[in-house]
Image (cartoon, rainbow, N blue to C red; front, side, top):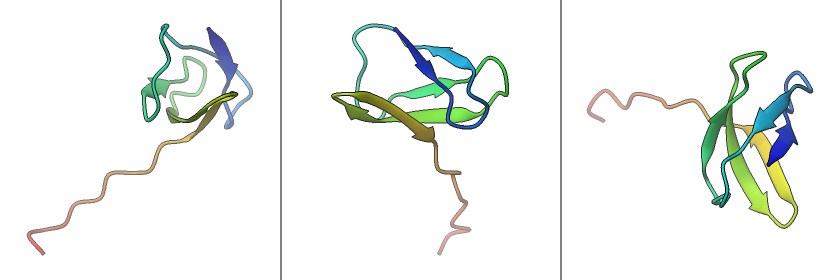
Length: 55
């Protein structure tokens, strides 16, 4: 299944079955994308992982 990257409009291939919160990488711009909806399938830029520095 192919979806459109929200960053660069490039094609992003997703393996079946698509799962909620799945992470994919755009082959064109290397953006990390997260599946946020399944019906219809929607991709958004994945949130950056922040370090908590032991807090």
